Image (cartoon, rainbow, N blue to C red; front, side, top):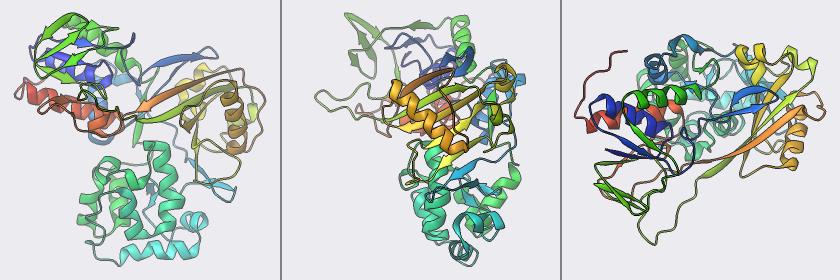
Length: 422
């Protein structure tokens, strides 16, 4: 079999296919495997250049990590709330009992403080509405708007979703945002009770996790397994033609069943490639002892229209992850995310200014910094009928969704395949 693309989806699918006894070749157009799981060194710290955590729902990522020998290195973030930088220029902790910003208790004091009494009263009407109201909503934005009103959506949910999913709630399907939410709404009768139920089964601090040493260690272990299983990985191998039963690379034709794990590969001739959304991440290493008190928790999300800030979110890496703090030598690692392509000295200067505003502590020039731009795949259907397709474009954002889909598709191709012993 031929897997086109050596991002996390392609590597996971190739591993599963090899375990099922298939002979597998992986083709990667670039000179590096791993896709958006990558590492960079900033200020002497080895950090994730892409995803630095994963959603624990379903146990998919943790199960894979365990099978790769990383189970003991799964770590939880510090149990401290993220903050919200609001459109009026003030900052406050996000409501403590919420899911993607959706409050479990609309009239809780921290919700009222965040959106005001009038908006909180509107949100509390959710408890009186029949469960069918909004239950058929296609997107998270539509669901929240219909159940709890515009203020909850715009002031609480949108900043969280933009920070977590790099998307607008009105563009994010409910199942991609929170797979259990719709079923919980039907069962509990209200959106607030649905959130409370999900939170009760997933206590604070357990909705996300990371890997000591970085999420990129998944790639290291996957590549080691592929080598052990005899999988051939070809870098700098951009396909010229992709069909159901063959791929051409240069003058060479490779025959076999094809799995596409790279966006835009195999587009119909003459079609215009659809560019995914660009997200830039700027990492700063700063010497500011006052940040040791984590004045804004593990990070800050930004409400649309907030003044004086271009970033859409900030993560205080050394406050969030003890393993990073232990390696930082008293310095602080911050990561800010931006929409669009953003790099060069001006990006670093902007990130320093934004971080000072969001943390409430002006910052001097960083000890070191790095800026990286990633392209997030857009949802799409492959142009070749019957093509096997895995990855972010089909599974949605987040490692949990991408890995689960890659495993599932590979199992389907194997006809159920043998269970892996891990």
